[in-house]
Length: 357
Image (cartoon, rainbow, N blue to C red; front, top):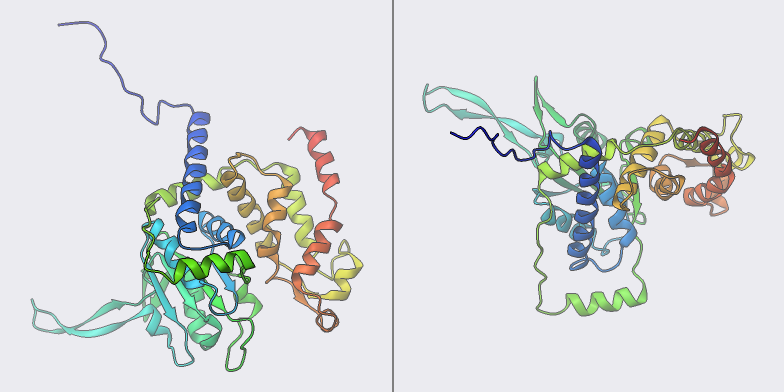
């Protein structure tokens, strides 16, 4: 019998933590590139929209998509679900939709073993991985509240029982910015539950020509799945481990506080154009979004440019403009543009050089 020790294979416990992080970064970056390629087979253009949706997903966040009908919002959501091997459901929100229509309900059924009638819970369409809540502002507040509870707590309550939703769970809700008759606009407290407010704009002339050619023929693109639900959950944990220097936290804090007209440090134009600013959740989403964006770019550190990149989708639905701003045609995006120029990045860069972090 040989005294030579048995050959040992390396496991994840044998690899240095730095090596594991490097592997995770490469894995996420490669998966992101493959996802963009697969989505590009179906969706033409809308690169910024796709990036914002993927960033939110890797942060376990939900998105509110705002755009006129016919811009492929539903197709984009179903395509993402397909390439991520996730269950997808769409709910068309209407004025007569009740909470039980989306959460599910208890149904009286016969028990084959005992012969007695018992209540059995029948799951509603909320029990999925990717949920498209189409025209969420067309349903009454009670049904909106049931959806928003599921988004925040990731469970639904029916009677005295609570049921967990599948993990991962993403909600992609849509709103039509033009037709507002007969709608129930979401209050700011409910809008705050969405990580991003994503604007879906018209395609360019070249993109629209490609859309016409690609969608009016017989060819149907075949999508290749890229990630599973468990892989997405693992990558979500990697995002939260991305290092973020102190000066980035300070920059995100200063940016959010500058949106509040009653703060001493807010600029004069905020006091004139904004009636209500963003809360602390905006700062949390700025940091999380910046971490995810850094990883998708192949970096394992956050920069102020990453925070700037996610500033508009994070802040545009958390800033309430005044009547004076509305009368001048000034939008929340215009206010955010001025804020990004006002909050001095140079001071935070100097802090980084002083501390070396």
